[in-house]
Image (cartoon, rainbow, N blue to C red; front, side):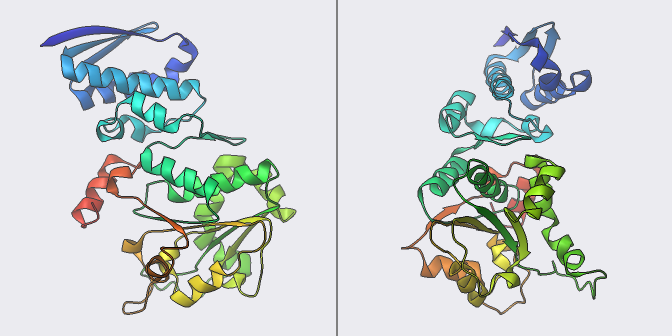
Amino acid sequence: MALAATLWFEDNSLLPELFGPHTKRLKRLARLYEVSLDHRGNAVVCRGEQKNCERARKHLEGLYERLKRCETLSEEDFGRSEHEGEDSEKVDELTRGLALELPKTTIFPRNAKQRQFLLALDEQFLVFALGPAGTGKTCIALCYGLSLLLRGDIERLVLSRPVVEAGEHLGFLPGDMREKVDPYLRPIFDLLHSALGKQSTERLIARGAIEIAPLAFMRGRTLENAFLLLDEAQNTSPQQMKMFLTRLGEGSRMAITGDPCQADIPSGKNNGLLDAEKRLAHLATFVRFSAREVLRHPLVAEVLRAYGEG
């Protein structure tokens, strides 16, 4: 049954962000739900099948509510049905009260699995997050650690990755030690710049409040009153994983993130992340993400399913 429904939005200052330049985002939603979406001032008229109009309405209203909470939207938010069938009211219930407010952005869990991970970080001393790229594992863990640092709950945020080449041999890299390892740690710097801004990031690094280092630099240390994040943990050996886990000192918390399906360690060698899952199931919390929670371009989830990670 065809339907014509009108949606009204109170705050017209949010509409340019919601609709996109030349209403590009609005048109993308219209294609997604096979409806027409026409706006006049603060109103959007939706025409199409009743079921499709209802889904488009919930999606659009959910995005508008996120803008009201000062959350940043991405193009991927307009490229697939909202949470693959979860309506905006349910998502809002899942994410209510779990905002991580940072200088440059506000982070909310965007599905039930992210909520589970964020709650685990808040309640447990050691949390593992396993699953595909694009599910927000690293972003949530890093931003949670930043929130602890900025409100004074910890004295230091320690971020680490194993320095392993992704299936290529790059040879000797020029420069000093920081310049050599910078390409491997660049994703962490990018996340910090997005959350804090470049100047604030460099200032906190200079005074030692934030430390970014390759995994090998962690040996022999005990880190107290800190939040420790080991990213790309699928590229560790069991020995390296044990070494990192035993850095945990008084008043500290630890998060380990990685995708077991994208390990770059030599074939035939034991994987430290999978080994830890077997050994520590009774000691730590493990949160497993799937392709369903991928928040990058919609095609990424389909690519993962094609490679058997769905």
